[in-house]
Image (cartoon, rainbow over all chains, first blue to last red; front, side):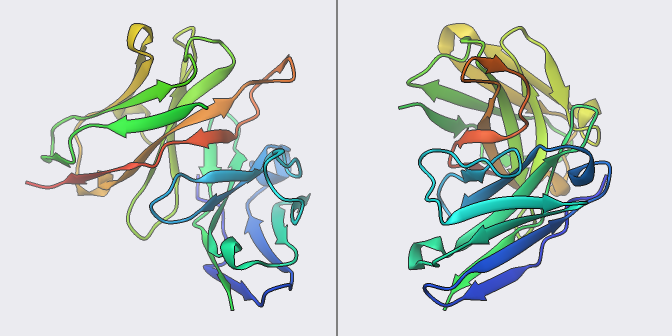
Amino acid sequence: QSALTQPPSASGSPGQSVTISCTGTSSDIGGYNYVSWYQHHPGKAPKVMIYEVSNRPSAVPDRFSGSKSGNTASLTVSGLQAEDEADYYCSSYAGNNNVLFGGGTKLTVL
Amino acid sequence: QVQLLESGPGLVKPSQTLSLTCTVSGGSISSGRYYWSWIRQPAGKGLEWIGRMFTSGSTNYNPSLKSRVTISADMSKNQFSLKLTSVTAADTAVYYCARDDYCSGGNCYSRWYFDLWGRGTLVTVSS
């Protein structure tokens, strides 16, 4: 099974919105509602931002939202802030007790 | 506050076995509320799920690594471990341990996401 496909980079100015896509297949993203997104500042522990497609942990600002359409999931960051600059990874259950991750997207706040 | 901390050798020779331990503090790995996973990231690449274990001892492994991986726990030390045999340079990566949410709000089922991670430890495979 191949990794999920993410754009290598994304960017936006403070206050703007940016959407990061994550494309899979009908065997992973399209087949299950177990898509999650992680924020990773290098050298720190990754942090879950979205789980089960669109659920947000209580500690995550509501500027972060998730959605899915067909085989593609998306993470939207609204009202960009400097501290949002990080690497973002998507993940999806792929059946047969297996999980796939994306290659990661580096988000730059201009 | 629950924390996860990876430990183990930073250098392993090719064909040998990579062994890492994750120490969990502030919570019990035998609570039955979580699975406990290992995930890795080669330099410049994306994340790769290695596998997970539950309190009962049941395990799930990435099919691509299954023949070489064992994940187990020492409940008395509140630790779980990863063993990866016959390593090559392709196994060089930052290795993370992570908690896999299972029982939220009293509802127990595999949600397949990782709600808490360690900071990772770099393992280099080289002679």
